[in-house]
Amino acid sequence: MALRIPEGKEAVVSEFPPPQPAPAAPEAPQPAPAFAPDAPQPTPTFAPLPSSVPVLWCQNLTKTYGSAVALDRLTISVPAGRIVGLLGPNGSGKTTLLKMIAGVSHPTAGEVRVAGLPIGPQSKALVSYLPERPYFSRSMRVREMLAYFADFYSDFDGALAHEMLGRLGVDPAAACSTLSKGTVEKVQLTLVMARHAALYLLDEPIGGVDPAARDYILSTIIHAYRPQSTIILSTHLVRDVESVLDDFILLRYGQMLLHAPVAYVREKGTTLDAFFREEFRC
Ligand SMILES: Nc1ncnc2c1ncn2[C@@H]1O[C@H](COP(=O)(O)OP(=O)(O)OP(=O)(O)O)[C@@H](O)[C@H]1O
Image 1: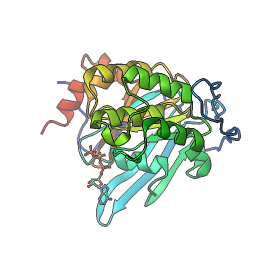
Image 2: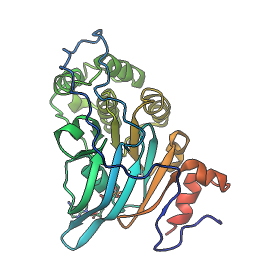
Image 3: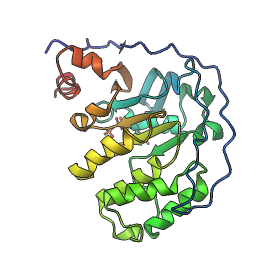
């Protein structure tokens, strides 16, 4: 295959705007609506970003654990309104990067900004994060989780969450402790995607769900419901996701190998899945 990235090279193939770290203050969050399935839908709590301000900007982002380097001087700029696949082999730093952006782990060096804001309460209010591991209480019922999210996040849309659960065949009255692994993933993804966030960070969102639900999640939840938002989605299921991606970021050994539109790969006469397999062939 002709399209390969030379060893040790980092590439950005894009018409993406250059990093603009100037802060753009979002509007103050609205008061939390009381949760009820038929309550009026909350409006987004974020103001549209000026095109000069990327929704995500990282510069020389580095994370080390002792002598191990998980992220190595990563510089990225992602404009608003894109669906971005975060790809790379095991241990390449995908989860570490998402944790830094979500603010649940701190960089060793370098900088991250969301919508021009340094990581903190204001940036976190704009981000809806699906971690790789289950995070909710197994002792609760699904509808209690929805109520909990509605209390906690002013941008949570209860009616939308109910609609998504219905489409995914999840009973809101079910106890979380009785759910299968895939159903837990569906509930978690529903909770995260039912927020009106500026930036969604999804760490392996479809790994455990069946193919039919995967199609619904990708084509409907991720693609159709959030046209103004940016989604960064980490996955190994490249073939499943590539049709919904605008761009992809390829990591290797914690370094940025390539950040490009998916069209860049297609123009070379290949698919993202084939490109990934070729690039990282064992
Ligand atoms: N808490 C930690 N302590 C020590 N090393 C860690 C820790 N978290 C991550 N690492 C290391 O950082 C590197 C990147 O890990 P990370 O989980 O970000 O990779 P990943 O691309 O998400 O992998 P996968 O595809 O397997 O989920 C790995 O070498 C991993 O072993």
